[in-house]
Amino acid sequence: MFIMKNTFIILILFIISLCFGLFISVKDDVRVLKVVSPSEIFIDTNNNYILDESNPVKILNLNYVNKDSDLSEYESLKDLTEDEKFFISYMQMQFVNRLIKGKRVRYKNSDLFINGKSYRQILLQSSLFFDDTDETQKKFFDKVKSYNLDDYVIYNIRSRRYHRINCKTGKESKFYKIIEKEKLNPDAVPCNYCINKKPEVIGIKNKYKTEKIKFVKSSYSIPKIKVYFLDLNKTFKPESTCKTEACIALKNEINNAKETIDFAIYGIENQPELFNALTNAYKRGVKIRWVTDYDRKNGNYYKDTLKLQKAIPSFKSDNNYENKTSNLSAIMHNKFFIIDKKKVWTGSSNITKTGITEFNANYSVLIDSESAAQIFTKEFENMYSGKFHNQKAQIQKSVINIGNDVKLYIFFSPGDKIINTQIIPLINRAKKYIYIPIFYITNNELSDALINAHNRGVDVKIINDSTNAHNKYSIHKKLRSAGIKVKTENYAGKMHMKAMFIDDSVSLIGSMNFTKNANIRNDENVIIIYNTELTQYLKNTFLYLWDKIPEKYLYYDPVAEGFESVGSCFDGIDNDFDDKIDSEDEGCKVK
Image 1 (cartoon, helix red, strand yellow):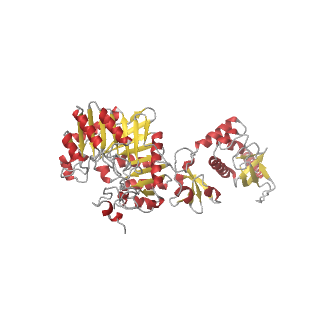
Image 2 (cartoon, rainbow, N blue to C red):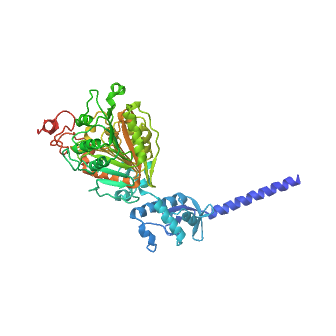
Image 3 (tube, rainbow, N blue to C red):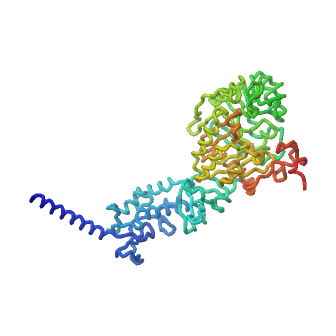
């Protein structure tokens, strides 16, 4: 009984001592009432919840960034852009407010203590602040450079409008916060000044280029790969001469062929230099085989295809086989040449007066790779053996590594179901931008992926052909309704490209339009190239074309043959496929 009584007394004394200690501790703690800056803080020294403006606490030897900071002695600060200074200043204040605002802290020796931890040390460990030591300065600048400002926006919580980090309007708002693009609400509205109206060149970290791109080269080379850009701004009438870089490159490869040429084309028309190069190669003993598309009547849209059949009879068409008659919507839509089983020329350019000239907009690619040639040869053998469309065997293939910086992937329709297995996953991984120049875009699954990307803050821009714009299956109006910028071209020539560029890292070029037929029925090819330099070049070709199209065509669509489509009433061809040319067409009649 005595022992129990003593134990009880000891326990009571321990509780009293603990309570007293807590009382003293709480008594010594003070509440943070206001944070002016990370080093100037107002605390409630009188515990009366009244802000005493005459008694702020100064935390010494702590450096931070704002417009009034005298940090000129730190040479490295000169490397920071104004946008970086603005951004990091905001991040500093947010960090401090979350850490101490409204909370109880202990003030001792010109420092605050939060749960026994030094406020000053917490800030330095965050690497958002620095002192006079080289180590903390280095960590600070490394931290600043680790942020990609393209991933963030200024968001006005009252107007729900969002701005770029460098937007003056966004910075001047009293109700802004900086958030990641991917965290924007779907109802967020883009700023008319910094996002909607000014053309963008995104990709160079923390650099904002708003000037228009006035010129781009017509070709660009990386190891083993050369891309040719065919600009529909250059020629307003179809041409039969082979004078573009893309055409000359193909002609040279044909003329230099030693042993074999295998090619798959949608057709050929009014390209005598390429026609003669092929027939001359055949006459000098080069083994030539080719495949093409024929309709049920053994005809081809391009008239010289039948002439080539007579000159080089070692050919096959997709109409010779049962699958064509049972599936009239499927076409052999490839445009590729395999030279001596070593090189491949491919892309979106048809071998015609509109396709390989600079009348239509196209990309062509020359690949100097035996591995790529082997993959294309397997696909060619499929078709040359009589297996077109869904009859073809799917080809086993792997990535082609070209040096350390180039990765090449090759895919074929319909077996690879490219939109579902490749393009949509690329869109889903995009973080900064997706730029698409396209002839036909009708695939709804792809449109849903683009809308999701737009909603998470990815900059999505599409250049649409005017023919597609008046196709009842086009999804461009659906995309516009979701807030995606879609411009419809207003030129005589076609926006015939079938391409996509993402995040300065990946480029997609091929023969395949983004349609259901192209994905699951047609014979098509697509190459996907991972390389920063090439993607930046191709992105600039897109922005160059984008700038050439008036802003009004973001909102309505010019007809393919009419006075609004430059040159279309005087080019001698049927631009809108209604069997009426130039002045015969309703769009070109003076009213």
